[in-house]
Length: 199
Image (cartoon, rainbow, N blue to C red; front, side):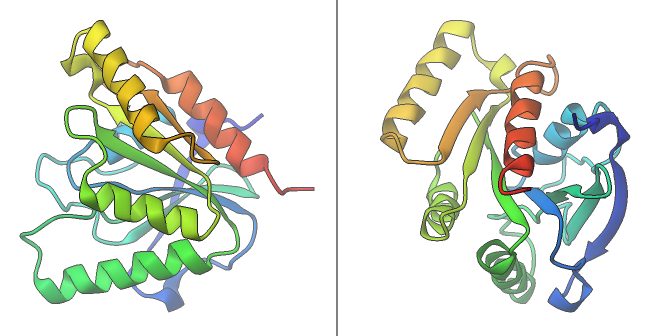
């Protein structure tokens, strides 16, 4: 079993040449700025400050690697949709992340945190399309589920599943880093992705 609480920071990459060797297994977190991506990583690893959190959108500006063990890693990708970053930087992030997602052989899947109050935005669907075109599994975390009542959260979960139309290799769950909701389910999915394709 993977011990998520043992996760530790490895390095940050701003350029393709700075990426770790393309070996082992990685699961990456991608999402719109300020949807709770870093908070989800911290909750899943049971750490308070592994991934840097901020109320300021666009805090994650590089690809950050976290080691779980000798073979497995979590990866924090720059948030997309942050309009205040300079255009050239947003273009760089977009090209870098696209190249990483489409060409990284050790990438076994994406975790896509989405604010449950605003799921499946155009940018989210663009990232999902990238996954589908690359035959890459995607697992959606409907974050901040504590902001809504149980009934409404369940309805949105049902609606999102309907919009995905049973897309192969795409799953979705409710999640709240604040209330520790859905953490075990998320860990189980990440473990499943990491261990897939491994001998």
